[in-house]
Length: 443
Image (cartoon, rainbow, N blue to C red):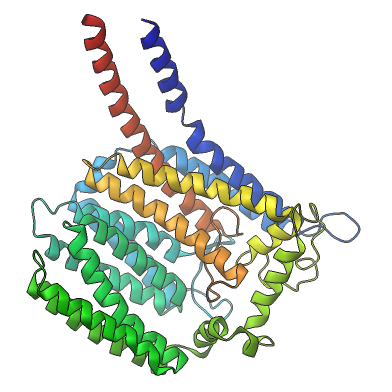
């Protein structure tokens, strides 16, 4: 009987979801604190707080949605009618944005409704994850490669609409989320990894060679061909799939080279070139990243303190409330504060992944959890990497930290879905534990 009480207490505490919700609350609070710090004037008073109040409003809506989505019946996502409705609504929003949204900073990415800006591409990320996970999970009834192609075609439509806004970074992020979710949903992981290695090495070799102008990057193409040759003679590998992968890789490589030469806009090329040659672009596109790195470094161990940042206050860091919010935070809270922030994100991402891995028998729910965890992980990786100058500059915000209503709301909506699945998993394990204890006590 003592044994039963001990397990029951653990389950009740674990089932309260404090470990899940607390990191999200802390991240939401740190986002508000950081935005407030950027509003501090030299005399110690606060300047215009409009951007802060908009973020607070977004958080209220987001947390309300979090509660709602944590209680919805997700089994409806298995019906194609529901998926078609989600997909159609996403495409319509993107079409309206592309043709009727106001031009802001030279792009059409936001719909302005009642003074608030809505970014449909943020909604598209969650739609792609849910749609892909639901369709791929049907592979026991239908051929998995047909399902894979269906999700690919559907995602390419969204990819194209987002890219034309223009939103190059966001469109690539959406495509990456689709690929990982679809890839994880397929059978035979080893075979799939080999096929991905062929495609990645060959297409990547063509692209990097085009960007840098150095022919030795074509050695990656040679590596991909060698992998393909060995795969043909390997046991368990389909010669047809290897041939298809090789063909796709070569076509994609040539396509990416053409895109670099003729399709990408100058500002997009500039961001990538600044990554490969930062010293040559210091007075131009590389200036933003260099100022961000200066701000992060000036924070040292414990930071300058709330409201004492200089790089953001004097506008040396552009977009210090959105794209470069991490630099603003690190300048004032230092290495210790930055590690604490990244630790919170790590907890959230790990909970998503662990929940997904513990629900392998529920393929759709498992893939949704992993997809949402990957979405947050990539958002943090890209934004922090941009601030540190480790990857090319992009316009990807830092979830729950960057000022932005749609990204904040959709992040909390997504986490509400994960909590919904999380509680479902806890209910199953709790019931199994109780069954085991009943048998133990009877014996």
